[in-house]
Image (cartoon, rainbow, N blue to C red):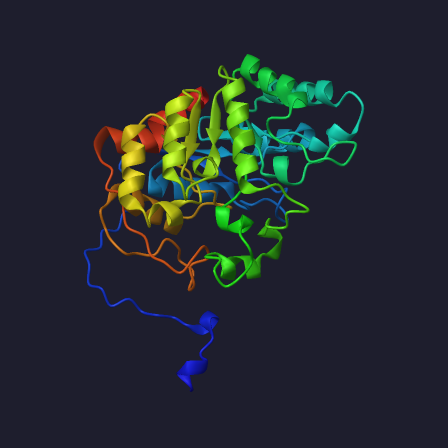
Amino acid sequence: MDLGQLRLRDYRPRPRLRLPEHLVPRASAAAIDAHAHLGRWLTEGWAVPDVGALLGVMDACNVAAIVNLDGRWSVELEANLDRYDRAHPGRFATCAQLNWRLLTEPGSTARLVGSLRQSAAAGARGLKVWKDLGLHVRDERGGLVMPDDPRLSDVWDAAGELGIPVLIHTADPVAFFDPLDARNERLEELLQHPDWWFGDRDRFPRFERLLDAFEGLVASHPRITFVGVHLAGNAEDLGWVGRMLDAYPNLSVDVAARIAELGRQPRAARALIEAHPDRVLFGTDEVPPTAEVYATHFRFLGTEDEHFSYSNEDVPPQGRWAISGLGLAGEVLEAVYATNARGVFPSLA
C-alpha cells in the first residue's frame, strides 16, 4: 500500500502512551442521569424495548433515576408516563415538549400554554425545548422563531407558574456553523450528517445570534429555572458559560454529549464546575444509556486519567482526539451526580 495515498477515514493511529487506567463501572454516589432519550419520536419504536433491562443497567451502574426528555404531549406523553414514571415511581421523570406547529395557527400562544398546563397536570416534570426553536420553527409568515420571541413569553411564564424547569437546547457545536471546508474540526461528522450543518447564512441564523436569544430568554425570566443543556450550547467557550452562570442564578447547565469538548480542556472544565458546584448536572444524552457509556462518564468525572477515548466507536464521532478526566471528588462530584438534579426535579429527591 502506498501510505502517501492513505485516506483519512482509513487512518487508525494507535496511541503508544502508557498511562494509569482507572475503570469506574459504578458512580461513587447514586447518580441521576438528567438528560436521556427514552421515547419513540426520533426512533422506530421505543428507544428502550425492555424497561426491565434498562433498570438492570441503572442498578448495576448506581444510577438512581433518569430524566426522560422525550415525553412530547397529549397521547404520547401519557404513553411515556405509563411506561416509565407511573410503572416505576422515583426512577424516572419525564419532560413534556410543545407542538411548535401551533405557531402557524390562530390563538397559538394560548394553545401552547394550554398544552403545557395539560402536560403538567398529567405528570410531566419539566419542559424540554429542542434546538428546532431558533433553527427550524417558523411562524405563519414563514419567519424563524427565536427563543426570546416575545410571543412565547406567556409560555415561559406558565412554566414558572407551574413550577417546572425548562431544559433548552440552543444552537449546536460552533463548528456546525463554520464553513464546511478542510479547516472544520467536525468535518468527518458533518459529512456523515449533512443535515447537522447550519452554516448556510440564507437558511439559518448565526451561532452568536442564537446564543444572544438564549441569554435574552434567561435574563427576561429570572423566576424560571432554566437548564441550558449541552453546556448551554457553547461547550467550546467555558468563559462564556461561566459568565452566564455568574450573571443568572436561575440558570444551570448539563454536561450531556459534551465530554468530548470538556475532556480536551480538563483544567478549564474542572475550574468551571468547582466555581459553580451547585449548577452543573450529570447527563449522557444517550438513546438509551448503556453501562459502557456510563463507565466512560464516571471515569471522566471522577478520575484524573489522561488521554482516553470518549467513545467506544472505532473512530470517535465528534473528533479525532482523546480526553482527560476532571478528577472531581467529594461533595462536588456528588452534587454533579445527583444533588443538583434533585433541586431541579424535586420528585426525584
